[in-house]
Amino acid sequence: MRGSELPEVCVVGLGYIGLPTAAVIARAGMKVLGLDVSEKVVETINRGEIHIEEVDLDGLVHGVVQRGLLRAATQIAPADVFVIAVPTPFAKDGHHTPDLSYVLAAAESVAGVLKAGDTIILESTSPVGTTERMRDLIAAKRPDIKLPGLCDGTPDVAIAYCPERVLPGRILEELTNNDRSIGGITPRCARKALAFYKRFVRGTCVTTDARSAEMTKLVENAYRDVNIAFANELSIVSDAMGLDVWEVIRLANRHPRVNILQPGPGVGGHCIAVDPWFIVHGAPEETPLIRTARGVNDGKIHHVIARATALVENRPQAKVACLGLAFKANIDDFRESPARLVAATLARRFGERIHVVEPYAAELPIEFTGTGAHLIDVDTALEECGVMIVLVDHDVFKSVPLAEREDKAVYDTRGIWPDQPAAMDGEAAGLRKAG
Image (cartoon, rainbow, N blue to C red):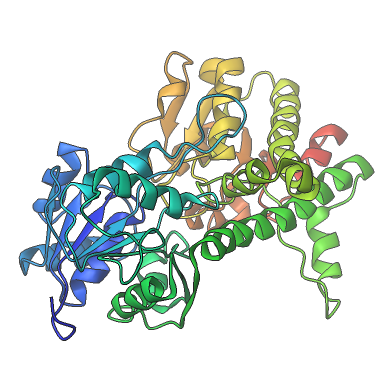
């Protein structure tokens, strides 16, 4: 491929990041093969449809598939640029150990079709050193190819790390407009990856080394986790003191150098709830603050469960509506969601008294099976349920006027109904104010 030609691209993994990335690359005119292990996902995309919820993604995918710029498959094929966007979950060892099996499996697939001149970019959030580990695996599989950092002279391929920085619900916009950190195994690798990203990214692309780029992604989410932990701990303190945490934060934030975040029922999603542990795993003796913040945010979930349980027990005849399962507002992503854990725990304890309102779910997740809990809409909840537990700040919940909920006992973990009157009994009144 000459520099003036558009590269052919293979995106490995068509999930919440991979599919939007593939679509944005295709929109820039490059031919993209999207690779996924799921036949259902592949068939859905090749029909020009999508399997995830994301603003404007359906129209974009339909358009680039119709134009022949994006197709999906379960088998890899040669390309000029390979973008790896697969999950990096925890291993099932109970110690928050990173599971890199998906990344290494993707690298092994790429190794099988690699040729001189190709560029491999890892986008998956990964512990420091993962890009080099991926390079070493490829080197073992393809001794005929000179790999960066392992050979004398000019390597045959370029390998880099470039994590996304996106917010669900704004992914297409942020993939294009946000700045990117591009870390190469060598400076030459970083420059080759930079040339690729500049074809579709309007934000500033800054080059660095791969290890620094890996750490930068983890630091960004650990920083947010620590700040959320302060807000969540403040909400627990306010509960103990009988204070309205939302009022305290509102007033404190009037200070010109204070910007306290809003508390919630915990922290969810596959980034903020996960990435800090990758830093802790890499330096367990040097990360007491990061580890403590994770403990505070996980502990907030159990605090919410305890407070919600008390409210439900205090209203033994009332039906209960748990509002929301997603990890954040207005998306269908339930990964690592504290709302999901709270609702499921209540369902196992209180059975058919629990009703779940989640406008982005067609059915309840598997952990609700056999509990007797029901999935209902918000109108039914307002008609039938005397207890409302707000777990997610979906817009549809925010829009409920006071007249439709003033007679409810409410535990609002998101602070979306500041005008809700206090419950009649003192315990429930304290719960309403809890953050």
